[in-house]
Image (cartoon, rainbow, N blue to C red; front, side):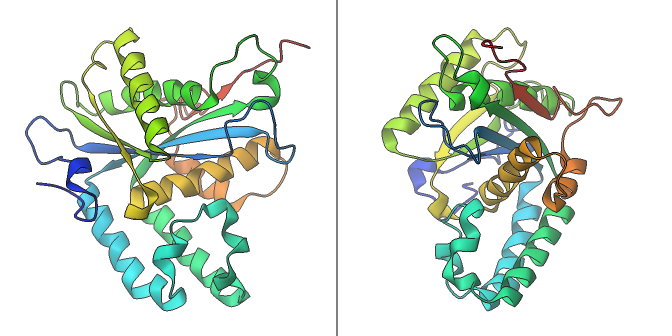
Amino acid sequence: MVLFKNIPESQGIRIYNSNFGDYIVFVDESGDQSLNSINASYPVFVLSFCIFEKLIIILTWCQRFYVSSLISLVPTFPSFMNAKFENVKEISIFSCATKFVIFFDRLNQIMIESQYTIMSSLIDKRKYSHFNTPDNPYSVGTKFGVERAFFEIQEHEQRGRKIPIIFESRRRNEDRTLEEEFKKMVEQSNLNGIKGMFDFHCISKKANLPGLQLADLVARPIGVHYLHPEQHNRAWEMLLPKMRTSHDGKLEGYGLKIYPQFDPTE
């Protein structure tokens, strides 16, 4: 059975099979990958991994929300969902402040009530750009995030079961490169059980998958909190309980990997 009807058959995600596990991972980013031209106001790259259990229930709830609430507020909602959430204030449909507040109040409620676990990789490009022959931030973030997703999923008795992992599609060549790097990373990993575990997919944002949209929402507040920890950040406070932690409550290194920890020029 194909889970999403609006995804081309060649990209269909099959999860109803005895070999598939109870979880699915969605991945999206905030910030750009360039190490040559670094945005001074947002000099980080964040890649967020959101793990969902019983996705059908969550999707049904989200879709009901979209139809009954969001479309009434945003007539052009399908087009809006193809925009990056970090640019949402620039969209003309939110020229009315009341609609903006109501929309995000309802969206925040979805993020609070939905059941999912977050792991994020944050690359500080100001430091990382000073390394000799640094790798692409997307590749580095993927490695850190996949490792943590693997650890989290293994804690839920999923060993030997296949887990779909869904990245936002960019361009065909970039998707192909990411898939090749992903497979190489998994094959070279020393983690027992990771080989053959993840079922890799790149899906266009035009598919309007709620999981990808939630992953998109998650990434930006994490970057903002890192850059401005002293500022009140409602979104960060809302996401914090969803983030993976150690058994004694430690976040960094478990639900959040910050890299690098030092600048080689200092």
